[in-house]
Image 1 (spheres, rainbow, N blue to C red):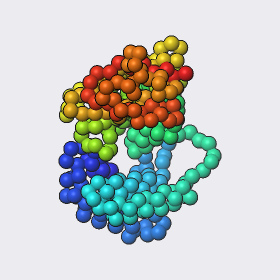
Image 2 (image 1 turned 60 degrees about the vertical axis):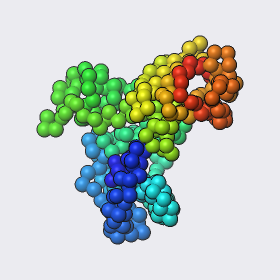
Image 3 (image 1 turned 135 degrees about the horizontal axis):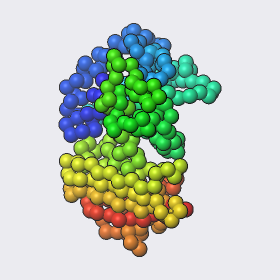
Image 4 (image 1 turned 90 degrees about the vertical axis):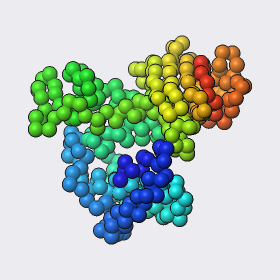
Length: 311
């Protein structure tokens, strides 16, 4: 079910939603019949799979009940079922409030995640304005972390945080893959947030897309380059910080017959330039605004070599 929601972002996704809408609606109705006004999930056999510390199976079920309800709202609107969309949005709000009441605590603690939590950790932190914490997690090399495996000789993504260590040898051998996607979900964040090549949810298939690089506030990473082969050609996004962290150099390629919404950190709109020309005055570029240290533009196809003053 969660994966089904992603097809609305791709070409033909709305048709897939229409075809499967009745079955998905029956599934949500069934959960509601089981749990009623508690707004809890239907239960689960496992918690956050392979997390270093045991996670409540009911907690994970409650989380995904809310996630699925929100996806259903988005998909209903995408296929023109506005009333259904509003109903699922109200359901999501009630599930969210029930979750906060049941689980939220102000006491500090160590965050540990498994397969079901790892993919949302860095994106949510970044969306909430804490890219510094997302980068801090990326840089960690103690167990559990992505660089822990690298420090222990990994050249692929492992199934377990502790699949192998130089001190303890192999992890549980009954289920221990050394080429496994789940914890590799951090790569989605590296493409969409670090490099900044992201889908536009209102324009499936990369006809229009978003360029929104997030520089590393910790200073640990000072340059990034990434490319993605879209249906319209190669998209490129490259950045480097120079001049003691005061200047951002940014290169981008927007392929033919597509356009990008660029959101670039800068001290002001006038501080973003192509050569000596403010980007807002470049032919074909539309300036959309500057807020919270980010300048936003609509960019036609082409190659761009930009600089932005950060401080």
